[in-house]
Length: 181
Image (cartoon, rainbow, N blue to C red):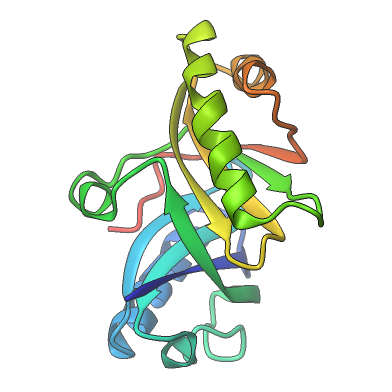
């Protein structure tokens, strides 16, 4: 099975609207033989990031704004690679993150260079022990990556990113109280 990233804009940006959207996403994925691996919701409830597994992207055809009443718009499926965590551990624990960093990857960066750079710089997170890097999803087309962190505040996430010399294009506080299960 492969992993796919979706970005949803909920039709209703309150906790109930997002919860209803997550139920729709889960049902649509399961109905097509896929699985909702995880979802993360921004603190403003204006964006939902969901990672699903499926045999192929075409099998997730039900996940469109036209078919999901609770979605105003849908971006995806974009094939992604999970970095920094094991899929089985993620399935078992469903760890919630406090912050999401989006990095629009430079056009000249390829996957092998990205992975080597990440591996070489990861030990530098020890310089900022109050931030925990949890995992990254890197789009296979190398357009961007999503990095998830547990930290007490945005400034700590920024210090963690500075320690590994990696930019932040967008930083989102997440609402861990909205779950996908």
